Image 1 (cartoon, rainbow, N blue to C red):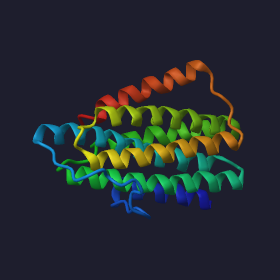
Image 2 (image 1 turned 90 degrees about the vertical axis):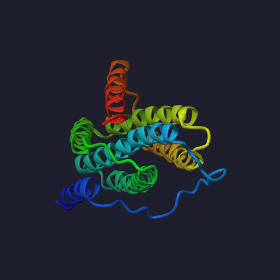
Image 3 (image 1 turned 120 degrees about the vertical axis):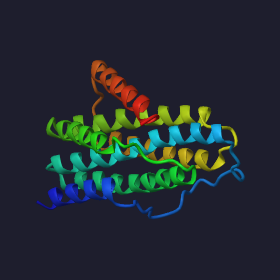
Image 4 (image 1 turned 135 degrees about the horizontal axis):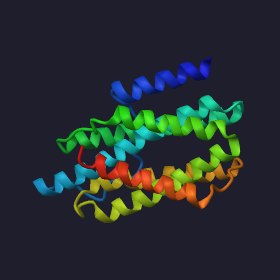
Length: 205
């Protein structure tokens, strides 16, 4: 019952409350950020995608924490969810600084991710952890691509993305150490296809 209340609270806070980071972004920007209007639009689109990714991360970890019967693993998922709240807050703040907004489809993204997380959790802890590993690895590759495509002068966004990358890789390592199994190739490809749809839509809407 406690896990159910936590899952409901996470959903409400993610979708309707202003996220608050527990700490400032640990990666310092290389210098002041000065962007023209086109660079701001480009950066805003990419940071909106990253914000959607954090909305989905909240849903995934909340659902997996709800599904697992393992109290220790539930704590691990809950802690990861707290870590992702920092990312949610940093990306939301950066979008505001760029004069932009989060995706209007965030409730849809959240619902879909929560369903996937719940399904993974119901298939057993090793598969659920394998889902975390593959998700975080795909997110890590995605973040690395953003470091290449963000405007060169957008030091503020780059600092956030770099810190997010470090944290996501840590989550993947922790899930692997906790007993994750590797997912079948076809499942990985389906996850990549779904992520491609999400990122393409979220960058614009």
